[in-house]
Image (cartoon, rainbow, N blue to C red):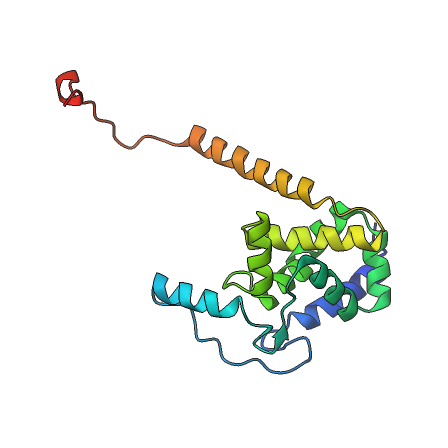
Length: 186
């Protein structure tokens, strides 16, 4: 488990990083123009964003490896030691709504970025899953363990398949019509 003081220190750094309107460098962000008005605008914005090295003044890594290096570079050594000493499950559970949200928001996973595009091409589609994979990979990197990325992606895809299967089982038919056999043959 993470010692209380160290966990609070890590959380404090992460909360500062997630302060509204502040970038990693402490600069004030530009005003957000809001969501696109239509799918064409969304696609145009997405295509533009995935080619950018910086979005709203924040550097966007191009690959998972670069993202891990960037997180290590941005984090105080004491925070990395605490992160490393905790279990993988504890890190994700306790830091998802701070570090995970920082990753999603600052690296543009919802609107698209070169990193989110890279992860999508690997088979990771939801921003929450992208952030979790990065956090797990960072923990494994700090502990000199294999990233086992293929296994992580397979587990995500299996979870999604099972969730969809369960949704279908729970689905309620709102209205059902049956055509006479003579109409179905036409």
